[in-house]
Every structure is written in C-alpha cells, then in structure tokens.
Image 1 (cartoon, chains in turn red, brown):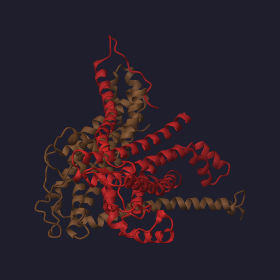
Image 2: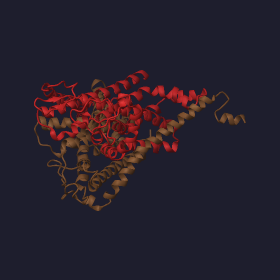
Image 3: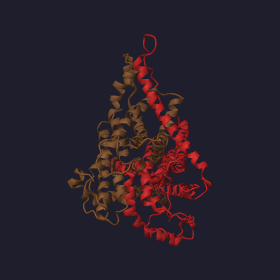
Image 4: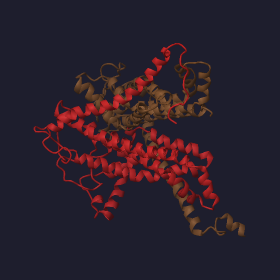
Length: 323
Length: 301
C-alpha cells in the first residue's frame, strides 16, 4: 500500500484551503530535497572528478599507481577496486549463511520467551559504531587470526587466492577485514531476511506440516523459496554497506607500500576507496590532488548506487509478481 | 513401544534419514545464533574491561585534554569532556536539521504521494540510505571547500550526517504512519477537518512514539559515525561549544588521534579504550531507550 486512498474534503469556497497548500507544499518540498540531494552528490562529484581524470597520465581504471600530487599526475584505482571488492565479497560470503540461519532461528526456532531478546541482541550488534570494530579488530582480533591464516596458507597456499604473503604481519590482512566486515553487515542482512521469513504464508507452512514434513523440510519448501528475493535483496544491501565501510578498514588493513607487486592473495594488505580517501585527507591539494580523491569517491558512489538500485529492483519485481 | 518410536519421529512413515537431517538443521541453526553472539560478547567484554577504568574517573567527564603532552611522555589520561560534548553537539545539530525533513518526506510519501514523483522520492531515499558516509562527507567537502572556498566549521560534519540520518528516520516514520488505521483519517475527514490538520492533529500524535524511536535510533547511528569527522573536522584537545566556528573534537576523532600510539603507550591506550567505552555506552543506552519506548507505546492495530 503506497498512499492512502481516502480523499480529503475540498473547501466549499473556490480553490483549496491555504493550510493544505502550505502543508502539502512543504511535504512535497521535503521530498524534492531528497531527490535534489542525491542528484547534487552525483553532479558535484562528477564535476570535480572529470577534470582531474583528464589530467591523469595513466589509465584511471587499470593502473595501480597512486601519485596524484606528482607532476605529471598518475593515479589509477585498480588496486583499490580489487581490495574493496574482495573484502566485501569475503564479508558477504561469510555473513549470508549465518544471517539466513539466524533469521530462521528468530522466526521459527527460537522459543517465544527468547525470540524478542535474541532479536534485540542481534540488533545491538548493528548499533556498535564502526570505529569500535576498527579498534577491536586491530588490537584484539587480528593477532588471534594469525595462526588461522598461517594454517590456511600452509594447506591451500598453492591457490593464488590463499598464497602466503610475507610482507604483512600481525594479521592485518584482507582476510581479517573480511571477517570484521561480515560481523558488521550480519545484523543488516538478518533484519531484512527476518522480515521476509515472517511474511511467508502460514497456510503453506501448515499444509507442509500436515502432509508429514519435518520442520526442516517445511522450511525448505514453504519458507525459503518464498524468501529468496528478499535474501538476494538483503545480501545486496549488505554488500553495499561493506563496500562503503571506512574507519574499520582504515584501522585494520595495513596498506601496501608504493610499487608493491600485484598479489592475488587475501592474506596481503591493500586499501579500499573509502579508507584511502579518509586516510589521505591531509594531502588534499586543490586541483588534481583533491580531484583524484573525488574521482575515487565517485567510483565508490557508482558502485553503491548500482548495488542498492539492483536490490530495490529485485524486491520490486517480487512485489509486482505477488500482488 | 510403538508410541515411543512415533514420538521420536522414527518409524510410522518417517525415515531415519529425514529425522536426522531435521535434527542436523536444528543444531546448525541454533549454532549459527550462538556463534553470532560471540563477537558481540567479545567486543563488549574487550571495550568494558579495558575502557571502564579510565571513564570511572570523574576527571574524564569534567576536563578536556588541555595540557596533553607528547605520547610516551604524558602520564595522565586527562579528560574527554571536549569529545563527549562535541559528539553530542554534532548529533544534536544533525537531528535538528534532519528530523523535520525526514518527517515531512515520510508524510509526503504516505499521505500525499502518488505517481512518478513519489516513486522517485522513495527510490532516492533508498539510494541515500546506501550512500557511504565517506561519499556524503566528500560531497560536503567538495561543495564547501572546493567549490565555495569557505572555511570548514563544525557544522559541516552535521551537514554530511544529515544526508545519512534522513533516510533512516524517513523509513521508520513511514512505517509508523502506515500503521495508523485508515478509519481514524476517515473519521476526521467526515467531520470536515482539512487534510493538513488531520495529519498534524490525528495521524502524527498517534504515531509519535514510533517517530521518537526512529529519531533516537537515527541519533545513535550518527553519533557513532566517524568518516565525516575525519574529512570535515580536525581534532583539538580543547573544549569548543560553538558549532559555527573553530574546531570541535568528538569521541571518534579522539580515538583516531590516540590510536597510532596505542600499542606503545598505556596512557594513549587508556584514552582510546575509554573513549570507545563512552561511545558504545552512549549509543547502546540511546538504542535501548528508543526500543523501550517503542515496546511500551505500540499502536495497537
């Protein structure tokens, strides 16, 4: 249901009441403000990024150099793109199975007295500010993950993805930040998936049980298929959140030195778009310097825009189908 | 004897394999929940055990960091008043701007909107909720510094955070407004009350507790955001209560300032964990208060 179907009374005199015009106008103005804000973000970033890219002496999309303050300026986003996408993909791969399981727990498995408290606990995980994840991840978690990483790269090191990287110690790797991001996006995906599962038609569930299905079979046939678009949409929203995470990455992931060789391994360092912009803010020099970072921010905006729009399209298609 | 087999789910048409899969699924699902609790408990334990000690000192709440010395040579933790006041002020100004805009947008979407404009607004609210905080901060930086060449003031951080808070409060207000039964609106219109008065006097008061909850959750969310502060605010050890000039500290920037020296210097580590503890307590208390209000004053439909 989108808008209320009831019509308000028109004035018996000619025209509409001034109160209605004023109030309705303010409401519409607020709505337009939101549209204008998003458009302005895109326009301003584009307007500042394009001149900087025009002055770039290497290919913006395929180069791994980052020296925007040199003359001539060289900056390319390939390294940041790889690290951003890889860490977010790891986060989603870890978080989604857990989120789906926890959402099922909260809607179908938890006893009545536990369900409310359990939901609140998971939502509290969402409330923890990301800087605290950053501090905790760096000082507490990363050292504990070093033996795990050593074991993984010892047994699976022949796959480039899990290759051993000697230059990063202390566990401050893409692998670690992937795990921390997974913890951060888990509550978001769980909350959305939980909503979808709670709306699965009860009649289907009861019919399955009446036909003799076990609880798991009932869920597998009556709840999960119904919730699939919702799970996909929630996953994409979680992905969007992970792509844009700034401070946790800045604190935990150790950056690669300039000119370091390209590594496919997740046990190496790197930097994401967001972390690079935030950590280099002191070096913003007007002109190409700032413009290069704005260009990186524009790429991030486009990435999250595409992911969020995709999530919305998935949900809209499901709604149009079922109503 | 047969009854026992039936109760165990075995025999009587149900194969052992199916019952086993069922039990396995139950174990996995309970396990997933318990594993998910581990990070929450671990983080809370780390922050409280390391951070409670500095903040129980009254100096933490009364004094700022004036007189702070070089890391490694300074032996007192000093206070965080400047950071606590800064965090609260930044979130306050954000709320003052964001909440009215969000409530009016939600009213537009629920009460007035129909057709392409409303769909566009709804789409943009979703997009805005997915915009990373660093991009919002970069936008404000681009507009304020690069295009208009103005000097950064503490309010700039609030402006960036407005972009993050509006979608959160809009969505939750929208949900609350949709919960108000149509009969209430119809009764008001039947009595000849104009539409705007119906909204202001009937619909809004009915959904007010939910709107307050959504606003509190939005407030807690922006109080913890760091990226805009990194881009638009520097750090100062002195208390500044003026949001329109100068430099204002906040808990996240205080953490950032002391983070690099944490591993070598216990005083810096105390400051970091103390600020983290203060921040997490602030955010959690606001969250729990908001949820409590929601639970106690639900609209019975």
